[in-house]
Length: 397
Ligand code: ADP
Image 1: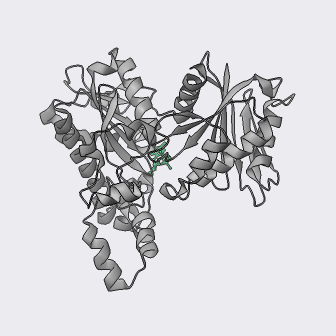
Image 2: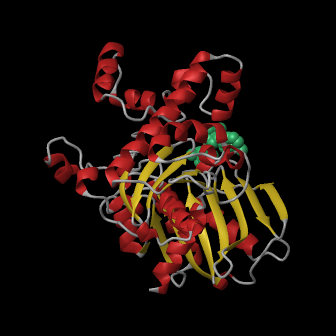
């Protein structure tokens, strides 16, 4: 069985065709600059193709993808009919789509009405969905997989904000969280790695990339997560401030005469480690600058570690213990110094890093000492595979 996974952006469309028997990627690629000049990248059969090709809209992008998936040289299938289903990544399903869902026209319209929860991402997903429905016809199931779904079941104590309750009822303002597909995936893989039933484990998953979020996973379910109503909340990130006293925003707006949109831009695009350091939002640049003695780059790195440590500690308290800490995404997978800085203060919980294992590269692995009570794991995330698995579950029902 083969599943096509689509991750549509406003002017891009990433895809992977996955063979579910082996969970192997048969082909993958990217339609970029859709609506502009158009570039197309495709990887299959051990070879890479890159070309300019005008794609006025997402439907033309999908046509390019299907053409190449069935191409004599670049193809991996003979006929589009070999694709059993398409899984679409959606950032936020609000309180309407709380699990992976088989879509029809009516549901796509409903999803379209939820765009204000993810103004940049959800409209792109709707465009990608409509493009697939148009090009592939009604016989191929189109399934949406939501980044918010893994977090949806968290208890109300973690989900609701202490503002007048009417705003939850009127506007649905609550904690949605983000990166849920990744957190759910690595928590599941962690249980496999440790040879345990997810029901026996309390795990804190740390998805640390350009955007970062931390999730408490008890018995396989999310019970709390650091991102909130939007992905601005939680720890400081590449360019986002994370949790700050909300009064700071009002104060700056008054002092600088900023509109809500301008303030939002300041907190989303100009803050975080970039705003602190004035150097970069990329942790590799910060490491280099700190090594050369840049104090603000050092401060940014130290603050990031400090805040992640605080979240892990607070989630251990919230769950009444922690069996494993999982690191994933760009920083989590590739930055041993950061993993070390985050976990060192957690020795009191029984987390002990094995320096040698931590400095060795590889796939999913345990990097704590054998004696460590809390296992520290590095698990490469694979959101596409997670989407394909959920898509398969939906069409198998
Ligand atoms: P996004 O949230 O955009 O998917 P990523 O998960 O790719 O972000 O994470 C980006 C961050 O990961 C950057 O700060 C970068 O420094 C770090 N990173 C990514 N790859 C590496 C690597 N090979 N070595 C060290 N750091 C890396």
